[in-house]
Length: 283
Image (cartoon, helix red, strand yellow):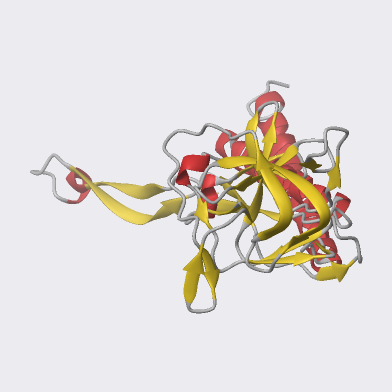
């Protein structure tokens, strides 16, 4: 009986967490570059169930007990992981030369006061010191022709080409990073060249990335590489990849599942109450 209550409770807990994830996705439908999260569940540990048979009752001279497997007993569900879906979002034109979008697996590298973070949000501006910064005032990282990371100082007619190459922009204040080896040669048709370029970071395993707020990802930059297959679009922003209709349908399913588990738990609680207070009671 208690096991059934715990199983129903685990179902309610996981569905509640899944509902929180969906609510977060819906709240960020209009957040630039936002990537939806999906809560993946898995079955809890299972136990084999056996029927105990007294062999002695059938064969008096044999004193043993036979166990016959009759099935499995589940213990509910649990959260396996919160998966970040990095599917491409729609690119929307803004006609601002300080707005940028990435098409591909790459991310912008941003230096914050907490360390280097990564983002797909490319609505940039120029701060009072003349550096290219994001919406939170954190500096956007690029690298120079020797492969050293630094900050971007846009000049007149500032431009970033599709392959990330910076035109009319200086790279200032080199950023010291250990264990980072960048192939800083830019893909130019069939050849490669060197020059100042936006650092478009890519990770072979996106599970290295952990969400930090609604616009940042935390990861070890030494495990990143320059995303040569990603394209940069100036004058565009990437929209959220959240599908409103699908999220609403999933939210309804989650709420129904939660309510079902809640009803089962209440029924078992009532049965347990009767067992404890009524069965075997002297009248």
